[in-house]
Image (cartoon, rainbow, N blue to C red):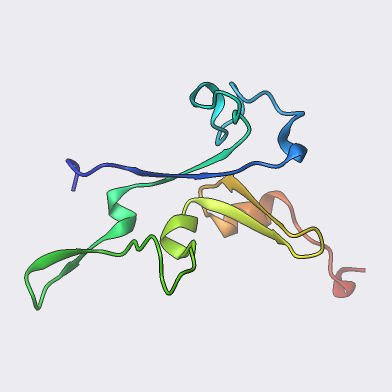
Amino acid sequence: LNKLPTVLLRIGGKDHNKHLDAETTPGLAGLLGKGDEHDVLIAITPLRYIIYLADEKKFRSKIFFQIEGKNIIGANAMVGHDVVFDIDNQRVGFAESDCSYGNTAMEHPVESPADE
């Protein structure tokens, strides 16, 4: 698996990203950009997109670039990221994450009515 490439998804950034420094902000295209420096890059490593089928004794890709004429970003692309769906403003936000909910919950507790 180490010899397989990491797949990079490049998603067009909106004007809301323009205040960020595209060269130093993780996850932005930056120097790869040439006019699209604020596009978002999502890295999908082989461990996230290749699965071993033991009964068939072969590897298979879990990544599909088009299903029934639509592009879908599935769970294998979202692993390692916090993903925020802003339905009202029709946008999606991605941030790299260690996906450790327990640590996040301890660092940023949310008060509930029972805590009052």
